[in-house]
Length: 386
Image (cartoon, rainbow, N blue to C red):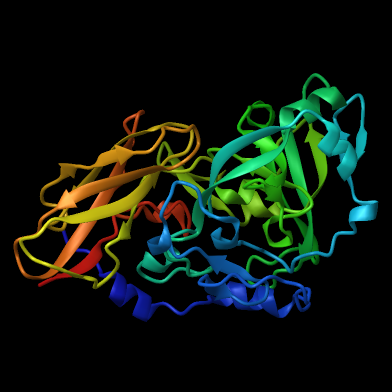
């Protein structure tokens, strides 16, 4: 099995792709109080997009100041004194809730993983349009907030409701083809069934502290099991529809092709695919021959559980089981480790793959029908054995 090395791919891919540049050109400067996160990888300056350096991972939970930041448009300035979340549409009891009213409702704290649907895009060959994420547009954190299902129950969803649209305060226009119809809000919809599940919350706190502006303050959705584009930040509106929603960010963008009877059809991106990433060793790290080395990483999947992680030290010819560590938390990643004693000297392609409890395993090769999203094919870490 032949794979391009991370070094080759990282050299070949610029940090920003054309649509991202076009999008940034239309955005106002970010607020002056935008925080700086030491050690984060800047993938885009305006709007600010920051990647978590996976090699620094030491625990199952990522600290807030290391958690990746994904922004489609400039970070909005939300007036907390006048903030309200409206719940409208196909409901009997429309709501308008202040932040204080939301915080007084029964809340839950749940660890949940978020992964950008384009995480790993830098490893696509040929280069794909979009932010050139490496491995770190992913992380698990603890989120505190009100279950979306409880909010919908208060609003008394009408019979025939089909989808719930989450609308953020962030706005902008995308000029790259396909262009938006002028300035729009970022929005995404969930099927009503998913919206009412326990793993979907409207969070106002992260890792025990108030939500930061970069991570969606004062309120954001966190949708466990689905890629991060569904976890709308700076949430201002919840709109219940009696029909499918065909918004820009689930038709023109964040969509893929699914073939039925030989005919490709557009599908919106939803559940996270199984994936294992190696945090250590890093690319071209020197590893001593004939001595044990602790390979360490994380593995995750969407609406299933991680069943096993396997590691290969010969580019995928032979595989050995890794040890899953830590607790098995729903909709979170699992840490894992593998004792590796390399013998052959020189460059070695180290691989890891995840299989979930539904039998889905990371593919060897990339499926082009996924466009530039849902990236979980095997990618080697090139290690120097000396």
